[in-house]
Image (tube, rainbow, N blue to C red; front, side, top):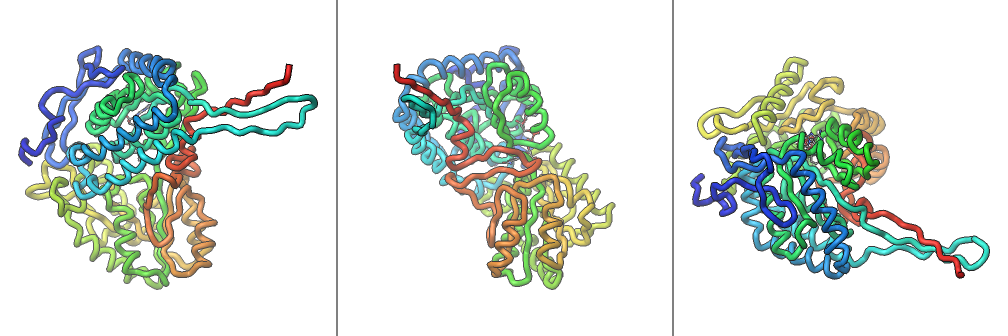
Length: 492
Ligand code: NAD
């Protein structure tokens, strides 16, 4: 790809942190590199935040919380969010290209997320003027009036994974700002570019300096932010392992925490399903974003009577998918985000084969001209998988499906739930009774019936069990950023 196609944001200059409305280098002067996973090409040097930078960002967020942002009325915050929505819309080609370059998602996919990104901002702009408490009748003697107020939780640390850099940043920021909180955003070190650019747009939208701060850096920066005594709430998206560390770090000042963690989601296809829809549905429930999706339907349960036929059709479909340059509009699957992720996925491919699973399609790193300098893995479907195998139990975060035959509704509910995770689940059938039984029986935060991975700003998303707690999207997400204060008034 020629340099002319680069967004002007990638002008060769190091990318700075956004603190208190200023783009500043890290105090240490240190930077880290962010590279294009399709080619290995350097995209930018990015300021590497350390504790002293995080202190400055949190202090700026606190000042803004107690100063200009608190003084602004809900209507004013709403106008800022609407303006930001317009700016994200206007700059969406640039923002989506930054994500494609930085983490390898195909441009057709990143471009298709415009409605969601802009829609989230507009949805929460709407809710900014709808925050309210209740008047609550009490049973005390005398004239005692009681009511509740909803107040912003305070300074929010938003720490994100790499697999949807722009969308995830907006997802956390929009309700936090609508609720009146201020934010220190730490995008993942693998893909910090679009969140840094979004920070600039926040200023352009009239959001006062310090209300949104963007800190780039790795796990150490995330850990410092999660443990910071002046952060009131951590909103985290990432692995279950790091989620546990966030809980521990929150103990110092008893922070509020919400966690969007990993998954190993069951996707269940009954013999009566519309297979023309279920085949691509099951494939893209995993292969979209090259499998780097928390709620990917990686445990594909197929009713035994159609298991063979389904696998044949699924494999044929997988072979039609174009793996390649993510900037090419015809590409379906781009590379994985990093060499480390490639190693991880390849280790699972080896483990699957060693344990006796058979790759009916894919099964290895994609190599050859155009692929060798990137981190490409072939879309893979494993058959002859047993529930206890590593590939059927652990989150791979790559384009790998484990296909598992089943015989009955009760059995598939039991096996579907036999995982520490509980993020998403899919059911494909025309039988309403099965839909009711399976959607009630599965312990998962989202159940998609005859579809997969549908999302909407108004519909809550989140985990059961070790997939986390708290909900993102919808009015429930606003509640994550609000405290309830009860006020009692006795007539004097
Ligand atoms: P990760 O947990 O390694 O990193 C996520 C973020 O946490 C990064 O910004 C990282 O720098 C930071 N971090 C690392 N160590 C930290 C620490 N000790 N304290 C605080 N922050 C720390 O996750 P990842 O590998 O970047 O992303 C993949 C994982 O994210 C998968 O498990 C996936 O399922 C999960 N995920 C979940 C959702 C969801 O909505 N449930 C969405 C996307 C990704």
